[in-house]
Image 1 (spheres, helix red, strand yellow):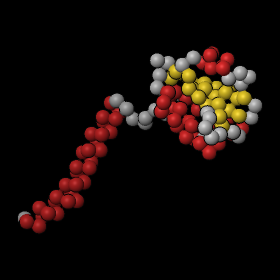
Image 2 (cartoon, one colour; image 1 turned 90 degrees about the horizontal axis):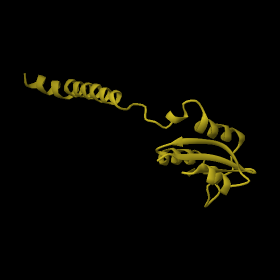
Image 3 (cartoon, one colour; image 1 turned 90 degrees about the vertical axis):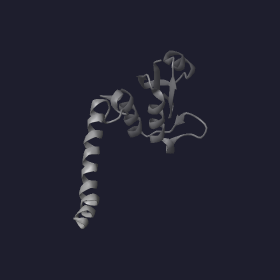
Length: 125
């Protein structure tokens, strides 16, 4: 199900949150202004990572943050910037991950044989 991660400004406070109905949330958080949002099917890891970035600016017990202008720009670029949908995606996946794993496995096996096994065998030859 599609979810929205949003950044809403209300005075000097910013709400970073998650919703399934962005329009209802905009109404609920009035007079706040929607600054940026991201549409995603897997919102939990994204919202967790964004909130972790600004944990020091969080008001205790709420989803509100006191952010500097640079942090607002950074959060906006994370949500709406170029390739924002790929920002929290893994570096390797699918076939690339499989090929990387196989090459790593072969290299590690080669080094184990060269460093550990061959010297032992050479002693008994």
